[in-house]
Every structure is written in C-alpha cells, then in structure tokens.
Image 1 (cartoon, rainbow, N blue to C red):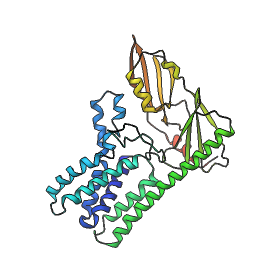
Image 2 (cartoon, rainbow, N blue to C red):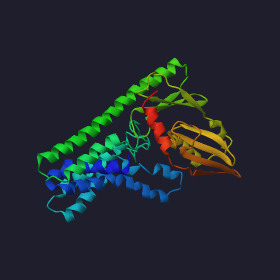
Image 3 (spheres, rainbow, N blue to C red):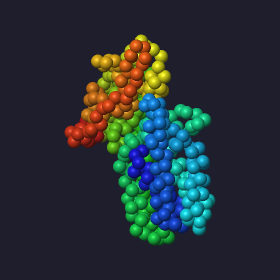
Image 4 (cartoon, rainbow, N blue to C red):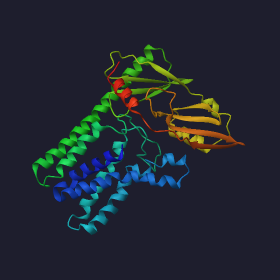
Length: 334
C-alpha cells in the first residue's frame, strides 16, 4: 500500500499495543515503525536497474524481519524511555512492522513474505495500492484520538471504530474478488475461450470496477467489469503475446529476471530500435481502457552485437481529468 496508509496502520497498531500506557507517543512510534519496511526503496541505487525490481518488498517485507529489527529498536527506545520497558517497546515495533507486509499482501506487486527461505512473491490482488476507502477510517480515527487523553473511553472507541471499518472493507475486497473470479470463469466458458490461466485485480482507487487478464496460447485478453454493470458479460480486448520475439536474442539474465518479475504476464512488441517488453499485470499509465497506451512497467530491449541491453523505458505517469472522469464513468457501470 502507499506510504500514508502504512503510516496510519502502524500508528493504529501502536495505539492498540501501548496507547493506554503512553498515549500519543505510541501513535508516533507506531507510525514510524509502520513505514520502516518501505525504506528498502533507498537500496535501489546500489543494484542494477533490472535487479532492483526485486529489492522492494524483499527481506524488509518478510515475516522474519520484525523478529530481528523489533528487539533492536525496542532496546534503543528503552534508552530514551526507560519507564516503558524493552518488552513493551519491542511488542510495539514488532506488530507495527509485522502488519506492514500483511497489508501489502493484498495488493498486486508481490511481497516476499518468506524471504530468505523462499523467494516467491505472494500477492492476493484484492485492493489497489491506493484506496481511500481503506485509508480514511484509519486516518480519521488517528487524527481524532490525538485530542483525547490516553485513558478515556472515547479514545478507545474512535480507535477501534477506525480499525474495524478499515478491515471490514478489506474483507469486502476479498468477497468482491471471489465474485469477480466466478464472473470471469463464466465468461471464459460462455465465450468459448481456451484459457491457460487468468489473473484479476481492482481498477485504481476503488473496489467496484475490476479487470481480468486472461492468457491463451497466442494472446492475452483484457476485460473490465463493474459490479454496477447491467450485464455480467465482459468484452475482452486482445494483446498479442509475441513471446517468440525473444527467442532470437542471446541468453540474457536481465530478460529472465523480467519474465520472473512478471510471472509470465508480459507481451513483446517491435520498436524502431529493438523490442519493447510490457509487464501487463499493472495495467496502463493513462486512459485506463486504451490498450495502446504505455504500460506502467515497460522496458526496451536492444541487441548490440549479441549483447542484450535491457532498460526501463521512461514513460509519462501523468493522468488527466479526462482520464479520471472516464474511470468514474466506467465504475458507474454500463
């Protein structure tokens, strides 16, 4: 999830662990702890560009990470606040850090929960990386409780209300994904599509509009569906896989890394200078439904004298008001 969401989740967890004892200090340090796993982005500069794709959400997002970091931070904070005790501080840091990758698991980038023992990237794809419906209850509850004393009933009620509302919504996203999976399976069957597999994910900023990426032998099929649509039928658009275009290239560690990163959900197309490799799992930059637009993760592949050069393409990430209006209109259903 985005940094603000992880901060307020960590703050809320900190309040749950130590708020009754130390009040707003628990909110502050819980919020700081909740952002610690994402500090791994600063390590990117020390890795080659393609390898850096696996740096984010690696060991810092493993369930083993807080077992190492929490006692160290607990010991450090005990030096500044000795009356609280190391055990209490360790618990605050442990749970505030531990819940970070658990929440990230529900998004689509992939989270290395079992690193270093197993490097598979887990993802549930039930919620978009920025979703106000999850973040706002936590944010508002944290904002409100700052103005109440640590031992008041109103503080506990507002805090609990924010936690419950946010995670009821998270449960709601799981239900939506299950329902959409059924709809996609029905459409694959009704339309006679010979599918090898498919993935589903919510469209940006909401959980009512979803999209599916269906893999066949020669192509990927992309289709959108809103739970406000009048018909359960999905109209798919085609993206040719063109995976065979990579076969003429020399063996390349970077290309193998990209294929692993995309979990096989990629397409290849010709470019005036070589090839373009598109990761299809995260959709497109703008226009939402215009598949000719750039993918969020797009790479150029050049073959220079049998030396493969792979670089991330510099694409515009700007979205217009028209893009946003188009998204809202599609969420309302057709």
